[in-house]
Image (cartoon, rainbow, N blue to C red; front, side, top):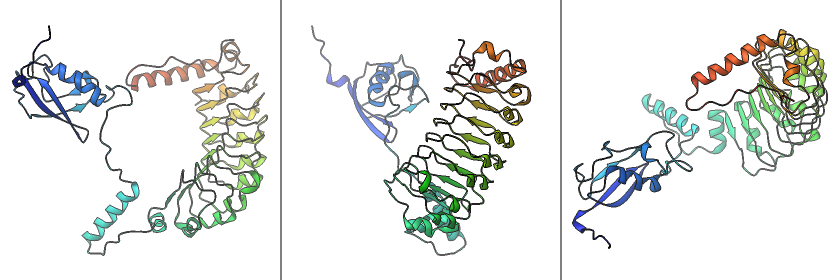
Length: 370
């Protein structure tokens, strides 16, 4: 027999959440827990992650003094949601440029200076020193980029279809960060002569392009701290690579490199090296000179052994990935300095557990058992 619901027992509620209003109709005898369960489908927030005005979920709406037309504020606890997360109204995004301009304008008002508005794109770039053209469907670099000249500190042209980096790049003498990943750049279409004029360049990303060779001119970029050239078709690194004595991060994974020059041992500032997914069968003994090295990724190579002094001399090394190589855990334990290395990596793992919120990942031995 169908139960009749008295219309006088129904109340209309307005739930305020994430910049939106959710209208609901419920029976006065429903509990707060019933309300939270109903809100789950509308907000994607799990009941235990919902914070309402009334915290006693066992109470009914009537007992909680909720009347027709009541407005209830809903807050969501971080992490306690389903699907893609809480359903909220998209707030307007304020770019870094807007924030900077707002601050500049406030300062101008404070000191009685005229406030500039409606800046053109090139004027904005000159103000903040950052040129952001990632994912702009570009096939060539716009001339207005070169017009910024020495004002530019960061140039991001990633994820386009750019095939040429001309000598005009040399006009950006104060450039510190150059991001060119995921384009169509080949060996002959990039002007290393122009790049060599960027004496303050500390970050260069050329990953996911069509490069097969890095020229000797690379060694002239002596301020480089990060070099990312993953996902190309590189077969080797130039001997002049050893001149990059300030280099801290090197990522050349997913290439076709079969040998590394011994001069890599001269890059004494290296902290992280990723050479995974290449064609290496051995590493130069000079790897032991990298005393600041903390992380070394070598998976998916044909390696059969490690430099004899790697564990003994690289006293900061705590991350080593040798999965999918011919080096097994039993072989690793035979390398001199293994005990000290093993202690460092386990200490690092324990620190990660201590600071990690939630569950912990299993300890990775770093190499395959067989």
